[in-house]
Length: 541
Ligand SMILES: *[C@@H]1O[C@H](CO)[C@@H](O)[C@H](O)[C@H]1NC(C)=O
Ligand SMILES: *[C@@H]1O[C@H](CO)[C@@H](O)[C@H](O)[C@H]1NC(C)=O
Ligand SMILES: *[C@@H]1O[C@H](CO)[C@@H](O)[C@H](O)[C@H]1NC(C)=O
Ligand SMILES: *[C@@H]1O[C@H](CO)[C@@H](O)[C@H](O)[C@H]1NC(C)=O
Ligand SMILES: *[C@@H]1O[C@H](CO)[C@@H](O)[C@H](O)[C@H]1NC(C)=O
Image (cartoon, rainbow, N blue to C red; front, side, top):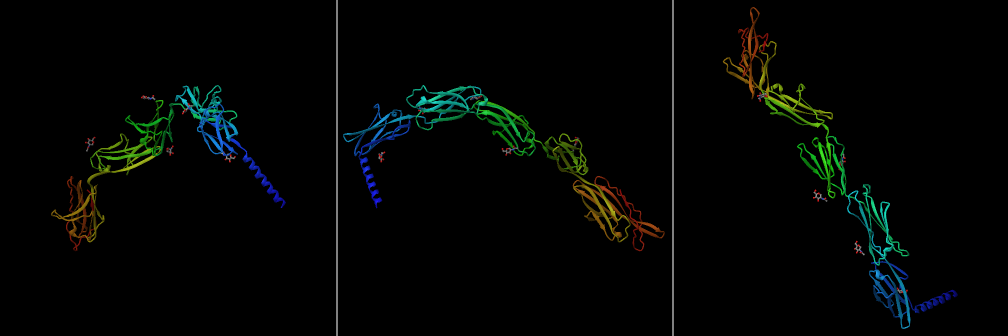
């Protein structure tokens, strides 16, 4: 109970105290004390009162200079707005407040100004050519007060130049410029030039007090030291991806043009990239490549060249027969085989069946004068170098009329009546001759035609005897051959006549007169109504 009463009396005391302070007339300026502001920003000063029902305000500068701002009066306070704050606002400001007739109070604040709003700007002029003097200009915009300004020009970490403006007596923000000239070396190209500007105004709090700008030292030069690098090398293998890279020293970067020397001495424009990529390189990509680089500022052009030789196993590019792969006997034929490869391939042309080398291969062809059927067949061309070989085949088709027509009679041993005789006719020719048989009557006119090459007479009888003619035919001619089935009698015993069937054949080519040899050495003999064949003879013509 006693405790509660104590608290109550404390509360009453506090209320009384507040009541009395509210009643007192007071004023203040916000912000109080020193005001540091950058030129161009907005500054508002507030003159606030308490303890006065209707105060009246007045703002002044200490030397009665113009206020340089706008005043707004409210019931208990007044504002002075400087937007933007400028050098004319660099004063002590005094706020005077009257409360009624008698009461007057005043306070002042000092407005201090600076200007350091932006980083320096570096200009390197003129846009230089290596080894000529260069001037570095560092501009520090809108500095105030400039007599505190300190400027440092550096090349990387090395100080080139230092300058201060202690003697300056500028009265407003000014652009300050520092210049420095020097002779750059080639190594200086690309190095950083740094301008450090400091405004270390004592007893003034603002940030930043140091501003820094860097710029690379450039020079227009080149193109120079232009070289071509070939990847995987100057002698790539066929099928490789060949990259030719043109490297040059140039600023600004050079423009590149690739050209290639052609066999006819003309030049072909390839590309304007600095890398010339040839995927799947071919022998025909061998040659002299030229890279031409131009710097449009220095107006200089430089060239580099590289000789590229594509290596690889041979490729047969042509295997052909003139005048045609199908010829007739007597024609002059040439076989041509060409191959590409690097190193130059050795070319061998041979006839396939016997593998015979057709002899020295020169001038890209082999001549077969006046061909015969023996020249027909498959030919092989082999091209070879140290990387491998390649081969290709072609067939020479020599057409000719039937030749070597031959008849064979089987069996060679004796055939008895009633047995079988097989007569086979063969002939060569291109296209393959068509073979047919005819049996001639004694009158000479053909009796019967058989279209098979093999004529089989089963169960031979006397009426099968006679002249058989075989004909071999194709579009280039025909050849005939005949065979005569005869009966020869021979005495085995004195009273016995033994008939023999013998075959004689002869060739009748169209061009060659027939040599028909007919030997009729038998007499007709009929013993027991039958012939007995004890011996067969075959004669060849
Ligand atoms: C003036 O001062 C009073 C009391 O300290 C405060 O409440 C008020 O916000 C101030 N007015 C201004 C405009 O600063
Ligand atoms: C400083 O230079 C800038 C341009 O760089 C210009 O806009 C500005 O007006 C200059 N200030 C003074 C004080 O000359
Ligand atoms: C060639 O260049 C291409 C693309 O520019 C790259 O993919 C390839 O690896 C390069 N080849 C060689 C052999 O340098
Ligand atoms: C470069 O050379 C061309 C012709 O040779 C000329 O017209 C041009 O003015 C030159 N340019 C420079 C920047 O020297
Ligand atoms: C083949 O060549 C020889 C010699 O070159 C020539 O005399 C002959 O007339 C030619 N024959 C044909 C069919 O062209």
